[in-house]
Length: 88
Image (cartoon, rainbow, N blue to C red; front, top):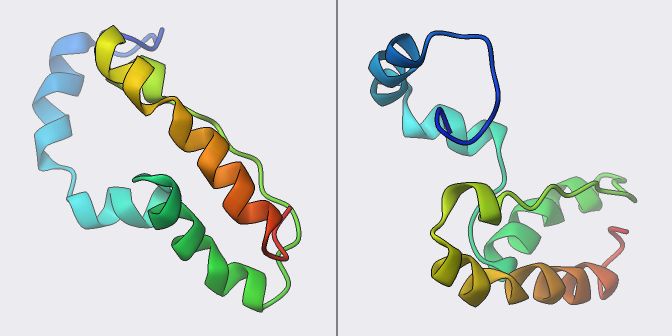
């Protein structure tokens, strides 16, 4: 994200630190994947009372334009999956 998101941190420092961040930690903090992956990760929260979720689609920040165009449909699929569950 160093090249895409405005920030005041040193670019070289971020590029040096990023590879040392464990993927498991990123996976705990963020929901990413296809629509079904994300809906599945939200289900345990719905089971204990989650009723609303706010989504931020970052596809356009991390993929090339042609790949972004291909993936943009996933947000619509996710919306449909969530509308079929208690999560809104």
